[in-house]
Image 1 (spheres, one colour):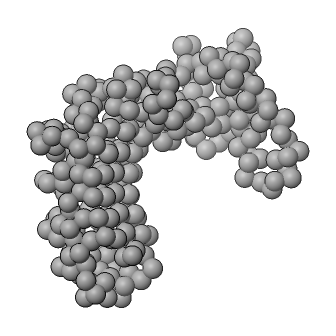
Image 2 (spheres, one colour):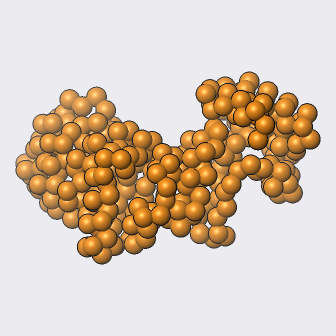
Image 3 (cartoon, one colour):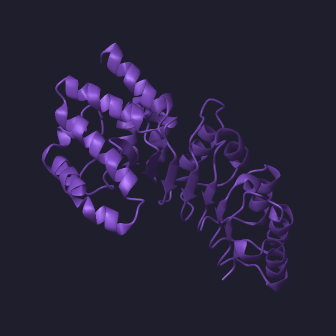
Length: 293
């Protein structure tokens, strides 16, 4: 990569919301024989402005969408030149390109292990990188380089793992250098990851966490109180604790300690053991923010 191109990409990364650095880079690409890549960036920048407008304006410019698809269908290598990203067919959704660059991608743990570091070097970085995993999660801990963690925005687990694997995961979360600086969503379904001993890790190693989903993960009153004591739940906007073992004690604590939270938008407590006593406390303090039925 030339110093000029490096500087242009750094400019895009420094101001990812602006179109001008992208269009300047498109001009540079065209001048250096990459006309299709340049055209794709320009078209996607125009589409991004139009797609939030009225439908008649979109209809009058449908040729842009048609040309975008032609480039994707017939010239993918040119359009994605310099983007080290592949997925195995049928495994996960394909990448989303926005304003000329990779913007959203879903990876399984094998792809993350192979490509996480390359994704972390992209400029601009993708706005969303979700890693789906289950029993293979500890392989991420063992195999992915440190820089790979910096790009991940969401972790999703939906398979049960062994007790030893859960213990390994918990220990890895608590490593002081195992940071997830961009992670905003953590999901564990059906006990895929044990909650034991991770309250402090959620607080310290996931500073931007906003959504926590522990559906069917055997979360009990003590677990909820531990998360509250660690200050984890108070900074979240969306909390889903569906189908757990939560009773009135935790319900009352949640009502008291989240009642004045400026962050909370939704607390889902369906299919737990909360009686009318806990329900009344939650509704009195949280109102429409809480989902009970």
